Length: 461
Ligand SMILES: C[S@@+](CC[C@H](N)C(=O)[O-])C[C@H]1O[C@@H](n2cnc3c(N)ncnc32)[C@H](O)[C@@H]1O
Image 1 (tube, helix red, strand yellow):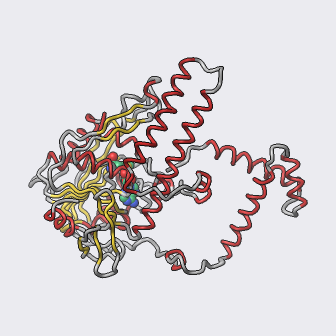
Image 2 (cartoon, helix red, strand yellow):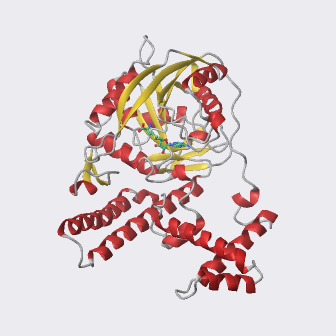
Image 3 (cartoon, rainbow, N blue to C red):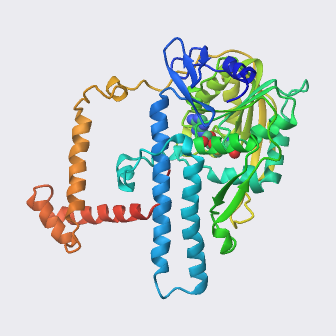
């Protein structure tokens, strides 16, 4: 990892993600907690600070495996289409480019993410789909993948604008001494602030190992090449563009990347003078008042919560899709004195290879901590049989119900033999006393339509 002095700096800011105790000790393999006995490894030289480190590592490994399987399947689809004689030369050229890029990207990702130790995984794509590796939606390996290219290749104007916007939020006395960036992604904003301002320690926290590994490596002076697959490519060549990712200069001392969940932040209470949440509060499952309390806890007295983003809420009840006015009122109730909100139209994800680009009216505001608030609860504790692989799994009524529906699901899928029609299947359903054939026809039709649509959906990694 870093020098002994840097390890000590980091240690003072960390808390055990499992028990919340503020006393992690460095070990040769990472960090350990003297209170609960938890040990937390280093992954690609970054502290891996999740409450259940091995389980989370297994989940990300599974997502990487699924992503590699997906790339192989996409390459295979392109190659099969290339077998057709009816393709024109330009389509052939595009498919060849894509097939090669998918294959090469898989090689590059496997190498880059070698610290996740994928070797032992060999399950089939279908196993992942059955086990739901692609869920939850917000935790995919390639969610925010485009940010990598924006951060470290073509995004200079956007990156500069974001950095300047945040800098204007700093107190007149100067930048914070210890800055935390929650949901730092591939880390460009954290790096730019650290490099351009007199900040002693900047901690960039994210739970996505792909983004964090790219951020850590490029800010250490490495160059990485990965493909960009733009949403709306401008030309054939733009369908898959091999980008070189690099930082302008290696970061100076004091910039740390750590892997952890902001909802169980492995950080000591009061450890930071400022906590920045860039494009973050509207994508975490926490209701905003709960997230504000988490931020409040991490701040030293009078420290600043620095908000940056455009409040584009998704996947939550309407009552939690807050406007700026509500955010300001909620901040006051969460122990903050919010300053004036500034708004600016800013380009967002304007890849030169894509016809798709966004302009957002971005809000920036600083809210000073003026009082402590009650510590938010941690996520509901998992039942013992989920944590301990040796305990019997209870036969809950809901499990029995799911077991039956899974058998029906398997029964319908098994009836597909390339010869039977929907009516034949409905007759079989009636014979098995599952449903009258007249009801089974529309039900099977709807079920198969869903399966057909699902098969064409892009999986989430
Ligand atoms: C919209 S992106 C913004 C990334 C970065 N701040 C930027 O502006 O480019 C949200 C980031 O939050 C991270 N994230 C989401 N939920 C998280 C969680 N519970 N803990 C840590 N990071 C999380 C994602 O991996 C992603 O990098």
